[in-house]
Image (spheres, rainbow, N blue to C red):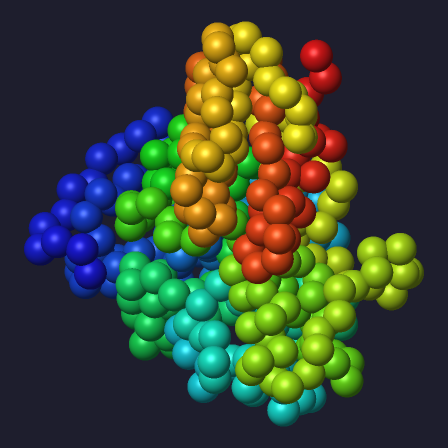
Length: 338
């Protein structure tokens, strides 16, 4: 864990833990077991966690986020070894995926066991499981497991439909007024990936990508020997998952894609693309991976600077660029009109 000491301050309501020691993670795990909420870092974005078996605590996640009740949550566990208590019918290709990419930015969808209740799954017969790859997240989840906890339900730690947070400060800025004094925000530094996990439906004969992310189609095929398919969102039977609505990941500023920015507008593009005169450069990543890592913080910066419009030149190609374009399409759909 980071550092040998900790600092706890009270920010409006919740406790902000700036140094995550073994002792502070133990206290956070105890707090989860008592029914409180804990925001914690993962490699993708910060999550807002509750005991996945505590109906009242999970209800507070929905309340704090303003999240629709039929929108399912992902159950976070410390190890693939305990996945079986939550799921039924695990295909061989899912075992390969878990072996190769957990801990990591991947959520697998299975038929749920009796342990997974409607208040977690949004009333669906499936449940999403993830083992995150962050020392603070894994430390918290292991401490919770050692106390008898079965899993932590956690969506992104922001108001529903808004830009996901990639720093603890972003969580506190957005959620502190909605959290209680017993709730905690654990600071584990900036997130390394920066966009949400790949969600893969493992209920069929082939892996089906419900949300693109850091685990790419090429990686899935290399692991399983099976070419994954992308879900057709027009199909009635498509499983509801986080981040799948047309309107999502949206800042207050209007987001325009692949246009020429004009003076006074914000601009996000790869570093090789020049900034026109009078345009406010919000990010100039050199790679697609860096683009994903800085995207949400750049969108938040636009709002902090009071910009009315942000223009984003989308990265082309495969890999994580697919996930970046997915998030930007939804951010552009959901942004405020000029």
